[in-house]
Length: 448
Image (cartoon, rainbow, N blue to C red; front, side, top):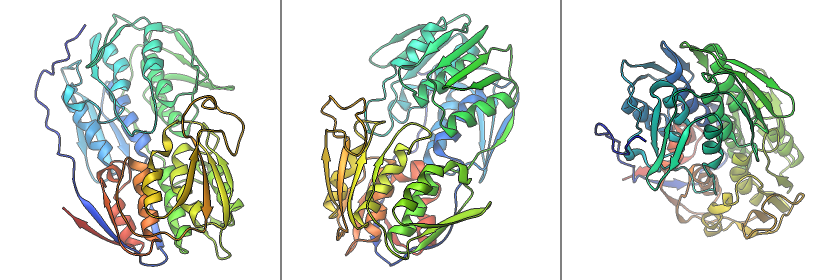
């Protein structure tokens, strides 16, 4: 198995310890353009490894995730050029099969590189994955899928090693429609020998977007009913270009920013079909929408009322939407219930909101929906929210990307100023988020 030692040093930018001072400044109004999502752009960058020529990703966001992934690819021998809106990638003459240990814990992208590296080099090593502390996202689905395709895989304390002369197509049934595992199989099966069938696949828009990009590169992929994806392996893939669809998490988050402050934010760049469930959920709470082919906006001139919402895999209510929704619940009349069924520790951000005056209580019971896979565990995965809560400014540390954005929302309607620490989390996942909020009228000062 390949050694865990990197072949050359890697330089990573230091994590920012910047602090935001936020002063509530009334209703947020204006226009926001969302670009391709964090959850899509990094996966497309990995897919570009497989092409024999250059690939270009248009409408790319300026987020920290892009820089981290680009540095990984550079360490492997992939040439990456980044401009204001585009990323161009091309495989270099030599592929180094080891993702350096310097990337340990930064995000979850290394696990997706195992399959491509096996195709390109016959061996691979990736360090332990990281990402937001929202609950267990085990790598066993990824590992078992690769083993089923003929790879020798070892999971050690420092990372995962793998070896394969040629991956072979097979039938894989996922115990849960995991987005990451579905992407790993896609990236591994497109150049495998024979046919691969995924049963129980994730069908999130970002997964389909990745499949379409691979198809442009020459892959043979069939999206079948009942969460089934069929991939016929080919001998080679070429480079391709694509326009990344607008980030549905950002779009929802900015719509909530307008609603929670009594303002109105017009969101450009995200198709309506990516927000169907979110739009209906907000409409049930009393939001009024204006939707065109180019933009959509929401307002609540008559106020908002509470709701019961359960997160789920696509096409259900997205787990990443629930963090801004939780803050919105605090400013809606009456009681609201949130039942998280995707990640058992997604409510890790609640103490920060409670510190700001949000009246939220969490439970290990399944509230607001039928029993989920966490019903017999100790996971605090349901919340009851009392509105309307009077929020107050506070000094809080942000635990992850989505919680960070929600803390900004709470600070925007609090009484008094707030200090937010760990804002690098927000900037890892939201395109130019500081500039977007200031353009809407929120008063934010950066401090070292």
